[in-house]
Length: 383
Image (cartoon, rainbow, N blue to C red):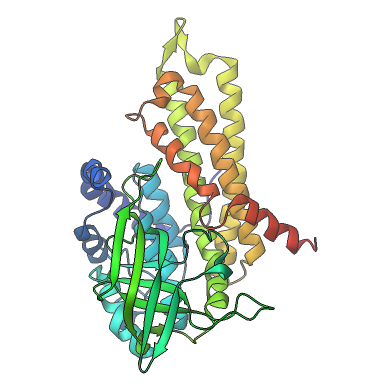
């Protein structure tokens, strides 16, 4: 179905992003996968093209665009280029909203100009060993000591942690209220060169091989109180405020992967001959691809409506949860069916469908598992 949410300026931006990925990223991507992370120069090159600073106000060097649709284009084009840019998505789609919403003018002046150019790379650290989706169970602590906090603890599954210059660390600054475990959490914007800050191993994953997913540890890390983001003790509310965009980001990637999988399967089955005729000529192939195409078309309508709602400030937490749930489950179905149509070759790493399959599995886990999404949607129904 024809998409109507993008205008000429979006398509011009899409062309810029496509050319950048084709010329600067795709040829180097095998090296990224071998290293387990993108090079630092990638962020500077993306910054020089204006990709990173799209939503940053002009006074800090950005384009001052409020619409999220340009961010969505970056994600869609990355999928079509067969590359994973999780750390960049964290930098642009997850961290930036916190800085724009909760940083002071002084903090914005310190951080945002370099954020735009790619000279300052960011990440966010919430998940801890043993806590998973239970953010209220965070055990990393930050004790006030004069005009500093003393940070101790550990985080895991931190996307972009290897290259980050600043990490938004969620820590407990006061004991939780027994009646409300969500209290007492704060966000510190931690300088990764601080003594006691350690980047652990880059975790080996099933997919997303070029995405640096790390363990972090903090041993008496001294963080200036001036690097507290927002008010002390308000982190849980802040995290909830940005969850709709985080889940929208995941949904964009899920839809793009499913859409691209259908194209790959269509092209492969049209070219591949078995029993003297193209695989695409068999009724089963046609019916499977028809079902997949219908899923993608339904997903497009769901996603585009959500993108419009988000730009209008109307995408609710339950709407975003429903979107992520449906889109990632659809992604899993479609990519699996399209790999099946490739036969044995679909299992070979040299075929893009294989990478789409491996990368898709985590979509139903990060940003809140499908089970958590179902709970949120059920709660919105009064259940």
